[in-house]
Image 1 (tube, rainbow, N blue to C red):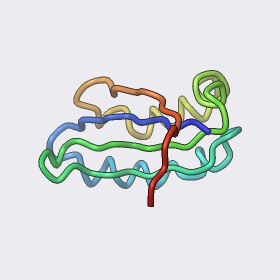
Image 2 (cartoon, one colour):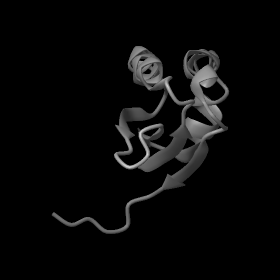
Image 3 (cartoon, helix red, strand yellow):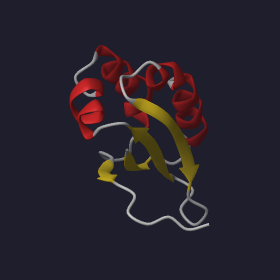
Image 4 (spheres, rainbow, N blue to C red):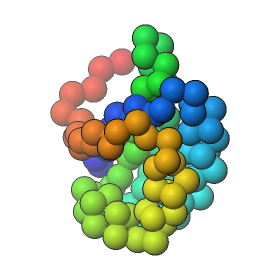
Length: 99
């Protein structure tokens, strides 16, 4: 299991539109091969900054299957105009879990 973490800074004032667009995109992630769920969190200190967490079965499910799909283009069409700059994306894998 891999966790995609995207740090997304949106244009000030576009936060409500961005949040609504991410919610609207749920079916895109739901049907994406290997996607096991997603969560959007908003920074308290920097309210125009978000982190999108997406759980994938494999790294390829994200970088090959999803990014190469028409649904990715739809996703970018829904949210891309809200970006203040390109998102920073990284992938992590759990190595230790606590309570």
